[in-house]
View 1 (cartoon, rainbow, N blue to C red):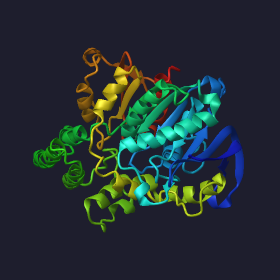
View 2 (view 1 turned 135 degrees about the horizontal axis):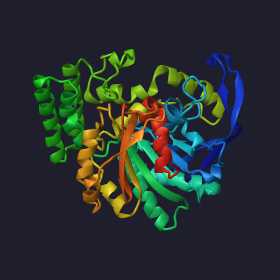
View 3 (view 1 turned 120 degrees about the vertical axis):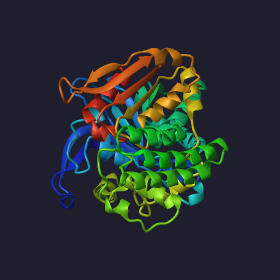
Length: 442
């Protein structure tokens, strides 16, 4: 039987001044964390922040689970301290934290990510089916432990590869609830800059970069040619080969754009860790581009130092992010597989599905997202496509448009302006407003 280890604090704390001073000051109530053994040799870590609102108790606000990308990116680390948690990486209060509008559950998922770990590499997940199975074990224990959340609206929000995992998890969760295996009030899933149909992203890289003047005609031909090779591998069901060719296509993009930042085309990547081209092989390059950016040195020092000391439950042999690259490697064959059919099944089951995407994201560009959405077999997609979108004012800039959105029945799409792959980092106020709209608070 899986076991559950937990830790709790009466208050959320943050460190004042430099980390090495270790000065603690209480900020707000409501925080707990723990481990669940989801399989033999597979241990998953979760971290809950109760909602902290001046106008409502946590029982009157939704519960949101945040899933990071990679695969191998840590929700408890990157999502928490870089995007939506109550404190930023410097341990200062975040003005746009999602904790002010919902309770937030961070899970280091899949096993081997962040503080989660496996006893052997053989226990790492190989595909989203295994990931969903593990998560259902965790959620069953979480809602058994935290019975107060069983009736509170529960949403899954995600980013990047986390969206692919979120779709699979949501489908299995819906089935489990129907069978009475889990007690929770599942109310919807939000797929942010999500790896739902990888090939639609790859095939639109060239046109997107060309339309933004980041490729010339020669570069467009080169990128499109490399992308076609990926398409052929996917069509033939050679998904590990497709992952390798995807890496080749990334290199072609970089060579023709003077190293465009895949996460935000208007920013330059200056991280020396990412520029060290000493590793060989496509998996090494992919991990350098898409796993290590989620484990920057300053964040690693925080998670392996003050935060680890605060939690008191991290085993001595576990290093935050220590298995992240192994997680990515283990998922290589599954990486380029689409899950559009799962989104269709969710919509058919009546699950509320939201897609949201950053205007400046390249790795999961918006036009690629629009491509797979148009392929949905859901009967409502024709009516959705014929609708006109609605502008949303930027909460941080009166009179300026921050996003567009449209919704039909149980499907919605948000186009977030001036944001890259990590929307809450780039456009925090707009992301917070979107959260409130999706969770029916606005």
